[in-house]
Image (cartoon, rainbow, N blue to C red; front, side, top):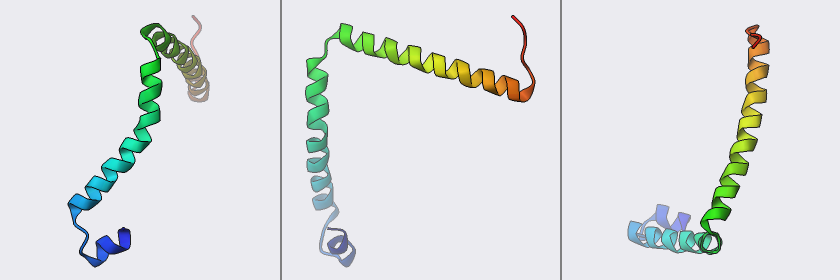
Length: 74
């Protein structure tokens, strides 16, 4: 398609329609997974992600403070 498009004769609408087809195929498994989840499952997943992110951020922030020499006692 790329060569045909560059050479001419392949319109934008054809390329866009093909892109839509590919994206829809790509999204089907994601949409099915989303439909299978309930609110409590999603909330639990988000909470677990938040806990991991906070722990990682705290570690990184401590390393930054040590590197900058701004370690305060609390």
